[in-house]
Length: 269
Image 1 (spheres, one colour):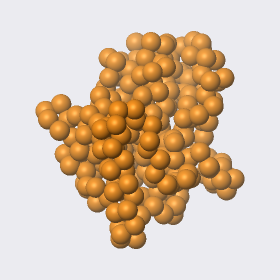
Image 2 (cartoon, rainbow, N blue to C red):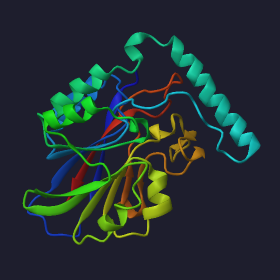
Image 3 (tube, rainbow, N blue to C red):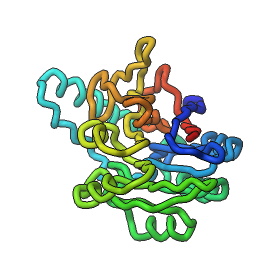
Image 4 (tube, rainbow, N blue to C red):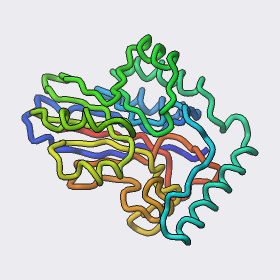
């Protein structure tokens, strides 16, 4: 398992804050062992923890990647995905998804700071017992919904956008006044739908950093939902209004190269 790092960003809220607010952004746990990320959380002591999806593995895991129009691109991407699908069958058990990993992570994370979650594309089949567990732990799940929050005297609205059925809720969130933070698992949804909307800060994951980063700018080789050399694989975009995490877990058989797992720490000032 690759070593994890802390990536730090500073965001100017445009509001007068009595003191900075420290946000821990966690993404793409995928039920893998992330005890090192948990240890970092404890050391960082954030004011709030925001999780942007693919925490649980609740989906049909058969690869389905026939949606790329260009034949060569479709061939390359299908080779990548089906090869990985086969290779993961031979991974050691300790590297495979196990819900006990994420249950332990969430139980401990909520002891550090309030936890808010949105859902990713791997969570379309969340179970009743998953909802019950989150409620039992005091974790707030934002499933195409939003909530007013006050931290250190600063009031803002936090929304959680799922990868589906967001059409009815999203306009009501965009129309709300004041500072708004959105948890949106897929950055391409932000690029396609929200980049020109009145949302102050959006946190995303999904890309896994592109798995292999190439060149000085760290361009991702393969970026889920964006394809080869997708632009929004990792980092800060749109003047700091979109921050994309490379994710907290190793989730495929191919190794990460120049692309460590990461905990994102954001200082809102």
